[in-house]
Image 1 (cartoon, one colour):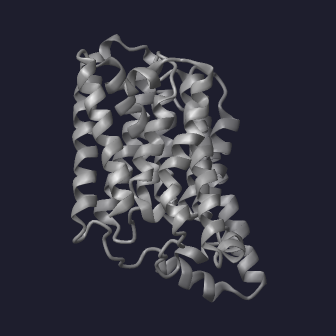
Image 2 (tube, rainbow, N blue to C red):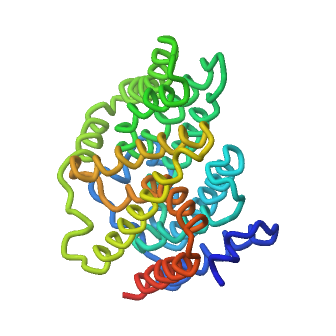
Length: 327
């Protein structure tokens, strides 16, 4: 059975990560296409060189997008191994990340959110690494730098800045004022460097146009898209069921695991708030939203009492993702 296989901790199962990703993206390689960018999305500060290199080659765009998905999946696996959110080691979180993100076929191409998600995970890693540490000055500064670099690819990541402070408060209830200052300085410095460069090269007006375009009104990806609406609804159902199970397990989990899941809740909450409040946020936010969902849903599928339902839920998800590739 699929769930039973993914739950086990066999070395060769690591090969499933790139194989499943490639299989779910194969339709996109048969008919490669660039992502349909809104104005300003492909001209963000650090994404411009990537767009200049790949913007005219749909196939290259697909290949690089797939490489990023596989890399992010392995980083998600690394986080779980390092911090043991889920006590059972398995490739299930990585596979779920690939499944959730592969359901949106337009994202089967390079997009600014992919490098942004990589730096976001690095920022989360630095925050989690501060647990049970006396001095976390470098953690605070590094997390700010990583988040800022990610936001220079994908502007919406900047709205996760409050998560830096919230994350450290969760990890260390008595956060020193220096940590707030250092995380802020770490976030501000890359932006100051970018602004200085654009100012020195006389491109300030172009930068303002790009930033304004990234927070202007865009069309919702859910509008008049029934298959995607059903898919998102199913993910919401799994999220609710997984949340109820996690709440029932909460007192029995290690203190560190409780803190990590609290932090994931804030990532989830900020992502959902952006979808509701910021019209510029589209389907790309699912790459960031999938990070906490992979661990939450994995915990549900692994520890639910009747595993047959876990198998059914997983097969439905796989079938839905495959179906979305061919409509």
